[in-house]
Image (cartoon, rainbow, N blue to C red; front, side, top):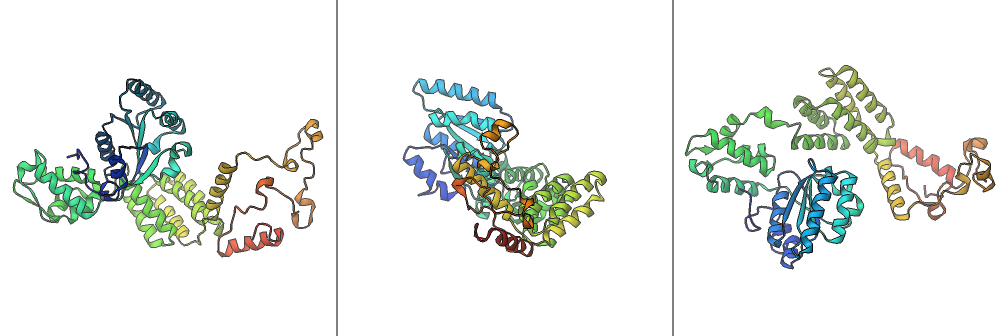
Length: 415
């Protein structure tokens, strides 16, 4: 049932419909290297195949799970040989490109720069975090939207009517609600469910909510810790804690526990969350999250669920701040933009006489020798002196930090 061309393709009208960006590119005879970013089962792989077919380019698929640097380089060597004979350069499709290591992504960079291949990557993760900057800067990112209810119904009806085997039983879709709920917007999962239903229904039957509930084993569909819902439910959990809703947080926690999720996985996510979303608004959050992980390792399940619940409700009920998260992001941006700026000479270490003679450490003032254990001196490179990177959040604890910094730096960083 995989579509063969853009006319059969369902969804993503903003990209492939009339006036869509990818449609316009194909009409102009141009297919750039690109990343298709979207949730599972919305047609990323299918779209990549159609784009290559429409552009008349060979399609070479690789899975980030199975392919290493060796396989990538072999594909690139073969592609380079093809282009020597005036053949169209191939489309190299990398499924789950976010799973590629930096070394694997580096191996792709030269081929993309030289135009040996047109690279299309598919990912469910934010490429800004998962794809190296050098490669990302040479690719266009296109966001695929979740399929709508109408899209999913159309796919179901098309399968029932046109699939060689399914169409023989003359099954009709009467009530789509339960089927769509179980598919969670994933067309691949939807097709599997339709196949399962038709296989167990009598010829001429109708798909109803009752028949779906009866046939599909709810516990297997409800939470697949090795599949897509693993990511959906942990995302809902994290967002509920971040949104200060302990009721929703403990509900999603229960969903994971009942689904057999690894308790240490949940605890690790809470450690990250305690720093990313709470930070200095409540430093105890990170301590409790770490203690939770340690306790889970010692106690295990099922008793560990109580500890997870205590931590989750505490984190959800804590004041929130992402100031530390933003600070390291800003600092990394500055480093990327400015390069390795020189360390001020008074901050350099002087472990030997030669370095002392060169002036290393000269002029450094030891803070503890001054009143209040503070002395006004420069700690940043000259090029970015006075640059505020950490901006305390607007909460009780960080307001106190802001007052502390303001009193010492006398407005230098704009506190």
